[in-house]
Amino acid sequence: MMEIRTPKTGKAKRVLEKRAPKLVETGKKTLILHGTKTSATVSSVLMELYRLKKGGAIKYSRRNENIRPFESGGETSLEFFSQKTDCSLFVYGSHTKKRPDNLVLGRMYDHQVYDLIEVGIENFKSLLSFSYDKKFAPHEGTKPFICFTGEGFENVPELKHLKEVLTDLFRGEVVDNLNLTGLDRAYVCSAISPTKVFLTHCALKLKRSGTIVPRMELVEVGPSMDLVIRRNRLPNESLMKEAMRTSKDKPKKKEKNVDQDAVRGKIGKIYMPDQKLDEMHLHDKSKGLKRERKESKLLNEETDSKKKKKSSE
Image 1 (cartoon, helix red, strand yellow):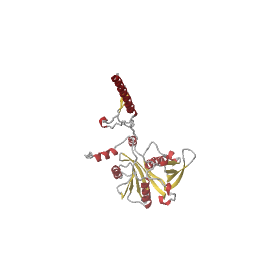
Image 2 (cartoon, one colour):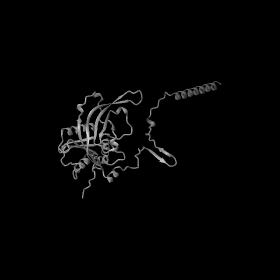
Image 3 (cartoon, one colour):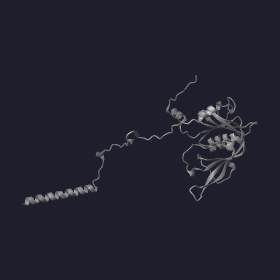
Image 4 (cartoon, helix red, strand yellow):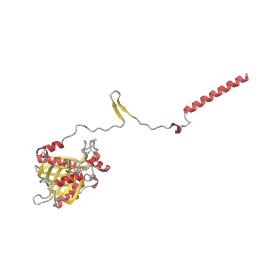
């Protein structure tokens, strides 16, 4: 029997609430792992990906001999690390004679492997090999444009699968509104052949166009590489149905101190602090008080004059 542990502290309860399913999910974190053996190219690619996703990625530098994607029993450690770090995406780098400079991209659902796609790295260029004006360098944590060019992304199943995984990997948190001034980067993916994709990272330059929408220019800032598709594994139908299931109830913002009545409609409550009138300082320089004083003074003078006349008679 597996022991079920319940949280005993408030901190543990808050951590479990953050990891619980939500109607509107937050940004997906990426887990970056090294295999048993990695080449210099694979290590630099993993480091570049970690820098591009800084703030939304967790990188382990140790070698992992027990992780073997696409093999039975070789994904147990991967699921354990996913549950430990609460990451729903992973990038696994390895290098062997049969598959040199190898990357495995995958997604998780409920801390179980959802799908996998394996690509080989060719013609890699790092960030340091590009020369450009540093004032156009993208800022950390900004939302990117993701551009897919080529008919293969619509017709070839393997490229369709790669498109979905790359979109989840680079898009970050889903938002409703976006400011144009905050857009400073773009990922461009071009389908060269049914099994080869060119991926590059560019900076966006906003220039005047004479209209409200500015004119954009791309400046290649790196990294760039060719991804050659080797193997892929699609999710099971049952797992896909469970992962694609959505709730019909939309989250509504709760309005404080507002009730609904069938007769009176929308009713609101206004809370005001107690007013201490005894302690309030009232000024006597108002115009109304001056007028009252003048009127009372005139009345007093009239009454005094009348009394004098009666006494003289």
